[in-house]
Image (cartoon, rainbow, N blue to C red; front, side, top):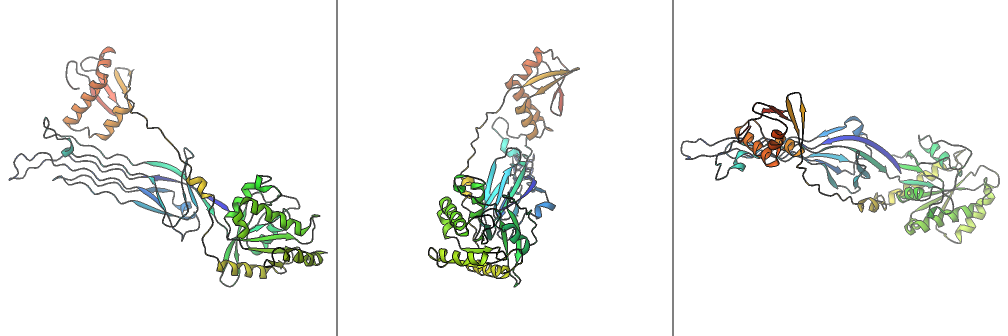
Length: 436
């Protein structure tokens, strides 16, 4: 398994503004308000497309912003909702909120989709604010802003062929000679700490992805060594090439190595024992390899007579081409449906959030001769309301009086003509009046 990453910015479309309008037709008595609502902004939606294999497209485009909703119209006509933005991603992509680290979704099935940035709600027109006491309101709302966030995409590429075996049996060398991958190769154990990936061109217009996976040791199913990290990679492969050091250059017996590796796979996941497997008897160019191979075939035949054993030498490339052709033939017989056992771990992960009550508190500070009021509730309301009408000013005044802001201003020494500022809106305080 190879992980590719991309960090991008997504933003849902803003909602359209509501409209202040009135009907004035000749034959419509008492026309009244006729301003329609604004349309909702578009969502940013990620959809799985099985035709994609990489996150390369996100290297060049990192910002995705949905369209804004259409403004409301007269004659009580609502603005159109914006179309959603569909972003195609390859299967195996994990979507993570960059700020919180929360896993939003693990996308594995073709056509699966998830909303990553919700569009803003359209603002209400003045037809929504008509009441018996105020049948002709000059009041409308701005559209709400769309959700925006930075997200990280992690693509878990599923290899077609996985190379398994004890450390130092020649897996990395084999990958280096059959593909353009350049894994670090050294004369010591555990050279491969993370999977190396290479694309193998068989030569007859067929190719497949091969992964050199970290070396396995006894007890891996219990987490020993690289343990479960290694075995998760194996679950993603379609066939297994089991590389065995047939020369016994590390002082181990080839048959015991093969038996121990298969036991670890079986103990971790019984289904891995059914995965198609080819034994690559490596290092056949070394002394004693031929003799060991004869003995190895006799021992394996007693357990699995149908198992294919192919002698190769990664160093001299003896038998390597035949091995690749056989692997390609096996892949042609297996449906291209990657195994994704570990997806359940992510899909079952739930994040619970408490709904926070709206903060009705406020603070007042004095800057020279101006009182500055800070209140999340009032600032949100002013952001939504179109503050260029008389009715909007009256609504603000009622809210300030109900919250006790005007009473607190008087205690602080506000008098007629004193400047008061909330966000970017500045006005004069009027003592004894029902509005400012």
